[in-house]
Amino acid sequence: MFSNTDQKEDFSPDELRTKWEDFVKRLDDRPNLQSTLAYVPELKEGFQLYLEIENRVQEDLINNIKTELVSWLRKELKNSKINLTTVVTEKAKGRIIYTDSEKFEELLKKNPSLALLKQKLNLDFGQ
Image (cartoon, rainbow, N blue to C red; front, side, top):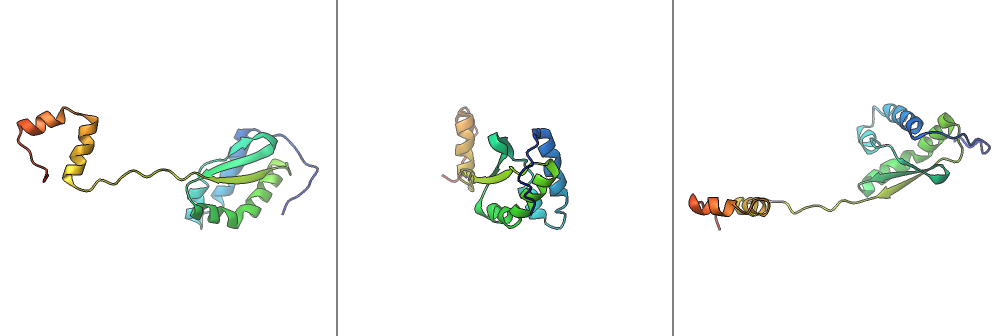
């Protein structure tokens, strides 16, 4: 693990992006991890990197290589203060629409004039 504590060179978000992508390219044999690391983390004050991920599975994948990744970034960017934090931001899942009547109700919310069309054409969606 790279830990030269006296190195503290500044680096830009573009330099971080380049080095991050270089590391991800090395993971050809681990497509799930490549997908998880597809987004470059946000560079915060004090050389803190914040990476938003979608779930705990991705967090486990990252934790397995976190030491290697951070060490590599510290060496490549010549900065021993780099630290990576993952933040799980679970996205709200919408309701899954299955039946024709449910599909029609969703479309009706977007375009209320469909009710008139349904009535004029005498359509029935199994209601």
